Length: 502
Image (cartoon, rainbow, N blue to C red):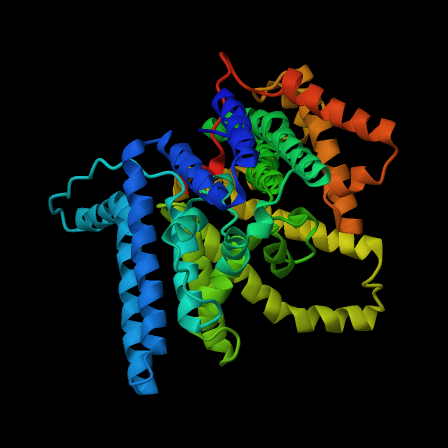
């Protein structure tokens, strides 16, 4: 069930109505049932995977706490048994993730190696990738590790823990929530409070902005992106650069749009999800970008992979090794293909280069008396950062490493500046009207992002401080634009969110 589908527009009001009708003590059970139904709309059989991951991590969490509470055990033996339990829990979940997501990738990679020796190939397996498996497994693993570290207590109520793993607003594409935030809210009856007009309207405004990002901008930009990438050999620098920039906008509006809908839906129900994006394309460095992009995932890898590897509290060589491992794994997390691994490693190399060049840049700025706090300097750094990010996005979007390399090579070598003046931009899958609608959507995006960058406010907070006529004018304009100019395709073909495949 997609957020931008008729089914969800029926499902969510029904869930909301029943949620506020039921007594507080029963509401989490209703949400659990609704969450399982929501996931089963894709494939009812794969609900077994969520249950399996939930049961494994629940038992492991309880077992770790039980071992910790046994005073008869020496501290060394306690830690040994706790590590064993956690290792088993992590291994079982990773095996499940690898089988369903990476089996054919591994087989394909092995077959490429066998071709060198002219040896027979392995047959690929017919596996349907479960929607959102990477998200809910990582969320469950995070809980289990937090129990092991002693930062939270193991949850005793299985149904409340099951809701934490499967909470439908963020089940299939995040944010990847921490148990200290979402699970504590599920356990607290104060979170299941009665109707709060301001909270509910705030949630709906956030949802509306998410729909605008998805159906007006992302799905429309996808048409241009698909046209350029599918026929990149027939285009030059202008079209290829436009396609790459459009994909940067598409993936941001697609994923950020989903996160906004998830955060808004949760807020309507009384839950506060973590922020997942914070104006990432206003970043002035790659490090700054990863503080702002997919925050729930980047912090997950920082806390559960980068720091356990040694983080930055080691030699420079090991620190850079840890960065490359973390970003390489992050790339493969996004998809079972070497294009994703290269995308992740590129960002790792960007960060290493940035750290190495920072002293030199500071020295040059000092000698040239550069005003590093000026708008012009920050704009230049932001532009360079965006170009580097956009180059990496080409690998993320390309069907193969070869296509990505040829795309970049042709974009750099085939200079067709005249295309800026012959209206070729209107021949990339979108006509003049559609391009103008896309331009309007991007203008609105930049405006809202600029307000957030300057004031740190989401759209709902900014509008709440405005004159009521202006506030309702903006909301009605967004509703009208989504309904009339939303890019649904023929027969209301709601496009799938990009990150559902992860």
